[in-house]
Length: 197
Image (cartoon, rainbow, N blue to C red):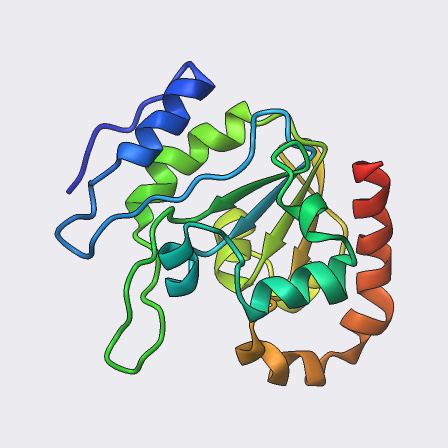
């Protein structure tokens, strides 16, 4: 499954190659999702497309997405799905399948090594938003997740915000950390709206 990891010069070539990628075909049926353009204002980094996203070919087309857009960001679907506004960069571009407990498998590391690094280098965004502990650990491996959520960070020279994943499975975390919704999210929301003006 290993392939040479190299920089891809053209963003158009990068997008096309991601869509054609089949390096994980031994693990699951590949269906790479790509969304956004190289001048998107916000790069949103998450774990991997959900089963629903894979089935509909649309990121965050589920309850998690509705919470993210409507409650946390407080923006419209049109704003969220505008490729000039958001570049959605998952750690893996395909739904990685389910494990025996019914949870999503971890994203294959080869995907971010091969594609994600190239994407981070080529998108000319203003800010990063990182969703969930797994994505946060990839970019900030030595820091505690709770600390990251409540601290403005800099990644790749740009302001970066870390959020818990908006999945209903995270409701317990949200109840334990009410300051995220009450105090932290309004700060992040103001920045998002400022960037999208």
